[in-house]
Length: 135
Image 1 (spheres, rainbow, N blue to C red):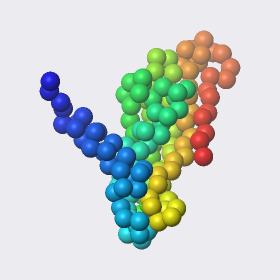
Image 2 (tube, one colour):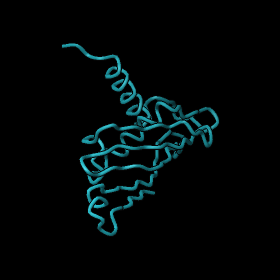
Image 3 (cartoon, one colour):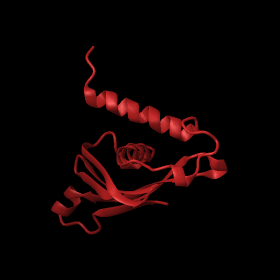
């Protein structure tokens, strides 16, 4: 069985995210002053956040793009996402950030995704969009 380099990187980022979630990666005295959220880790965390919502069909989608390259602060990164599933296209923006309750890092997310039904628009039906907001 041959494993691609991209898949190995995805698994490594998932393990890093898991360690970050459990607080095992950093000692108990971690603070925001010593931590910087990387853009690749932010993108992996956003993929995880999108996959938690079944009505978004993120992992069933095609042309999935998650780009996290707008740094708001050392512990907060803005992301743009897009993908499609059949006649439904999804696009939106979101934010990943780290908080430090009890001096341990935990990740949080928010996003606003707009679902556009292309078939609905082709037959000129009203209201072909739906917005999903998670805060």
